[in-house]
Image 1 (cartoon, rainbow, N blue to C red):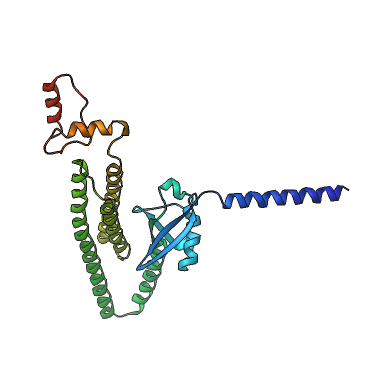
Image 2 (tube, one colour; image 1 turned 135 degrees about the horizontal axis):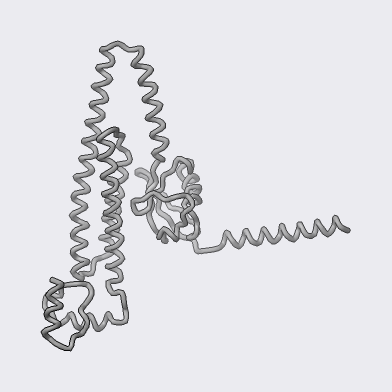
Length: 273
């Protein structure tokens, strides 16, 4: 009887665990994630509350790239495996960038350096000179590649600045403008990741990476302000009515509070010019 009761309890616990697992797997809505990996584009469907570590497992099934070799970036920043998608701001149809883990690349560079040192021990002075010329050429290529990306980022910075001027002036901008700018910045980030650089060239590459990330943050802030320019939606109508009295329609996104004196109101508006 004791054995039978224990078996019954185990069956009950097993059934309970199975029901709990089924409930957990169905918790939260499914969202579509667009994964950009080199020239390829992949679509994945995962629960909104998933972690980036779980997302990497799904990516591995699509791309064949193991999770420990993956570097997943969202909005220009690498995400930790334990971080949840919904907490990071990932929504339906969001885009993430997949790169190969740079730690793997650094290990490969170290192996190449070790092989190079062994080769130098057995080569003549003429072969050493050829090797030095090749390294100098690679460094020159790295500098040129970083400079090319910097030139493109400079152009994109003008685009971001124009969007900032428009949002600050109260002009409604289509969300596609922010999305296209973000996509172009992601492409430049991908180029930077593919540049093999050492020394000064590596420092310049890191500086450009930080620069691109800062532009991403600026775009996110501008997009949010563009979507909801008024912190208090209840006074949006009254603010619009007050703005209609001005011909230019330009100024701060936040209209001044009503004043009892017209002279006082004029002085306040001059501060927004």
